[in-house]
Image (cartoon, rainbow, N blue to C red):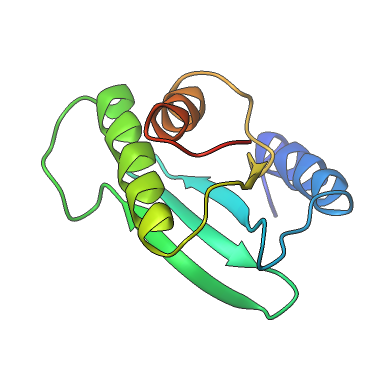
Amino acid sequence: MMSREALNRTKRKMHIRKRVSGTADRPRLTVYRSSRHIYAQLIDDVAGKTLVSASDAKGDKSRPVESAAKVGAEIANAATKAGVTKVVFDRNGYKFHGRIKALAEGARSAGLEF
């Protein structure tokens, strides 16, 4: 059985996913946050393919918010190399603060538009 917090996040996630979809021109930037790491990927929902991904699992062990900003910059740089400048941000049911906000600001500062 899921905890109440996890169940509420799943409900928020499904509510958001009904409206948010990515295309080849404007893929979906989705974020997953675990207790230790943060992951981001660009997904083309029409083709069902992941275009680019990044995480802090393989990198240095800096503070969580700072490493999330680095992941945001890393995903933005990889996206521009793949020819993507505009994305749809999918926060995956998480509140827009802390590590999620840092990742989004890092991606925006590196050139992604959403």
